[in-house]
Image (cartoon, rainbow, N blue to C red; front, side, top):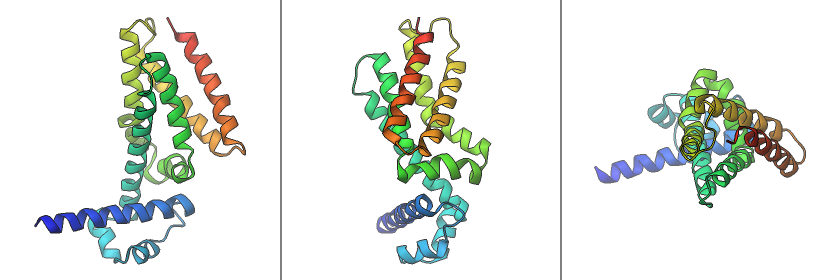
Length: 194
């Protein structure tokens, strides 16, 4: 039984890894399941068994991408003990990780269009937005953003970061665009600082 569970987990992991590469390179609509299963040396039945459909496989891949982005945000923000620096480092980590070639198409372009805005938004709220909310709430408890609704600030900042990543993803100089974005995010946040 244990061996079977390990094999199942390996199959799922392999399918997600290969599918992620295909979704990132070709996009959802141009990705062909037969190519994924051929590369994985499996059958289409394995995809349907574990994920239900191509869309189910995409959902699992997007969940993995969002989880990795959240982990990166936590790791980068954890490099400082200062809550203000943590916020800025976390925002920067979100922006830079979301626009990486392996992530941007899946997370920013196909995610909302394939799964629908409500599903994508719900996933975002459970991932990066939740981390942002927790950080802003902690900061408010320490005297920052005293007269500001943390719910509203979280949604506004999250929306700004998501829109900025879409803009950056289409810019010729990503590094320069990230710096421009972070300068503006910092200026906006300074306005709310108590």
